[in-house]
Length: 364
Ligand code: MLT
Image (cartoon, rainbow, N blue to C red; front, side, top):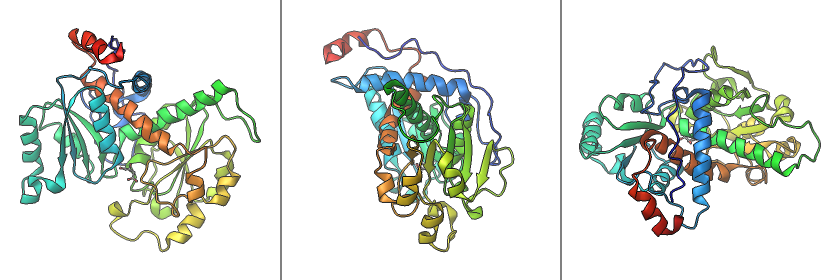
């Protein structure tokens, strides 16, 4: 019998919670996932609940369900990726979808084909979802007008990376639940909140060029957390008007109060210029050094979306702390992306015949 949550209903999208200073690039539809704002608080909660089911599936002897059998998912990556592409492809395969993998560097784009022709070519083969990463903000939204498939934003320029934010929320929720379940609150310092309300999350580093920061500010604040951005002036957006955050350049003044220390890579490929005179100096002022790691509250969680540049935003000792959730984030990414795919493509439930097939495959 399949344990895929066939009763799950699609969420009703709600308008964006915090305003952004970036152009409004989102659409509000239950067919696509372009921004965290497409989901709102209720939608984020629904995806996390659905992800719990896929976490359970991953613990089975055969970690696969037939929920998306007969569906085709295409990954269209116009920019480099290791974890996001593999994570989406793993998620789609665990739901029994067929996966088509497009890579810009080995495509007809190299011969001068336009983005639109490329998308329409893939669409003509019959796909149900396109998972898109592109260096320009807004490309996934543009693609929605060239295809009838669901479009999922896997990172567009410095705009958004919604599934990263969802997996980060899920990872924090899991860590808080494990802590309250084990009753282990030993150690110095104030007790951290048991949920997102009142949780103090510091996002540290290159906020200006980070799509992860934009999606995470939307998601964390929608769930009730207090977000503080920590960066030098050159790595903050020109205006933070409408962002529900505090901002500071003094890491040491906020560090002791942080429940979550979320570090970002310097996005040199997006900056197009040298933003920092000296990476060693950056490490000293804004990095999670080994010495700062020792000063963290014993309950503080350390996170990073990857790829981590050890020695710049995080010292190797800090990256490998027991409180570092970096590999948990990667693992949870598969559950969250399974939930997103199921939410967009599979909410009508798997065909009846699948249940019997599932029993034969040992998942009864
Ligand atoms: C991204 O694609 O934005 C990554 O997950 C973060 C990074 O590249 O630093």
